[in-house]
Length: 273
View 1 (spheres, rainbow, N blue to C red):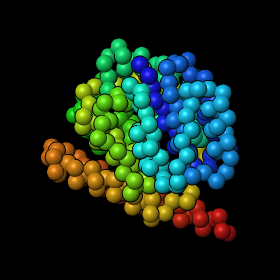
View 2 (cartoon, rainbow, N blue to C red):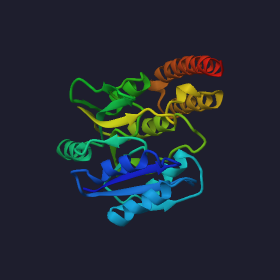
View 3 (cartoon, rainbow, N blue to C red):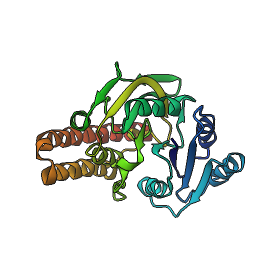
């Protein structure tokens, strides 16, 4: 079974080589790597092309800048694999990640398989992992997502998705934050089985670009809250049993976004002093 790995890229020259190297060195070889350059103005394109020259599994696609959702949608159009994975270009992955996930998906006939993550913050590493190898049906997975549980996290990059489950689902290009959570919610509505593996195989790197807490603003907060509004609207239209949980999720997220804005404004004041 082939895995299509979608990497949305915009001006990531400082991190890209390490990220793509970790993908190229995967022990699972039946992959295609779709490098979606979303109008980079640095040397990201050159780095991507060098990997394509060395490894025929890599494919470089340049497009005008349209945001991360637009880039991921472009990748979904090009993907030919049986499963879809996502890697952010400033992160890196364990060499056994995709072998572990696809093997579990095959054995247990899963639609989504997720692993734990390492959060890299300078010299500090925080592991976020489920304590046991638990299975979820659609209903249980949706409940955990709406409760903001790490077991069914809103992250794309620590998972693989069976491609036929994603048919008809796209990233909302009007959202700059929260687009992944909405995408996963829509996907969970269609699955049969989801499983979390208790191994940390994806490393998320906090850096100047990803530390949104240091430059968080009303636009980002509004996008995140709009994502939850859209989830609530879907529940009201078709899935009444989830309305109450979606309302609680929206309220919790609104409070969380307010806290981030306050924290960010305090940081900006200190920085100016």
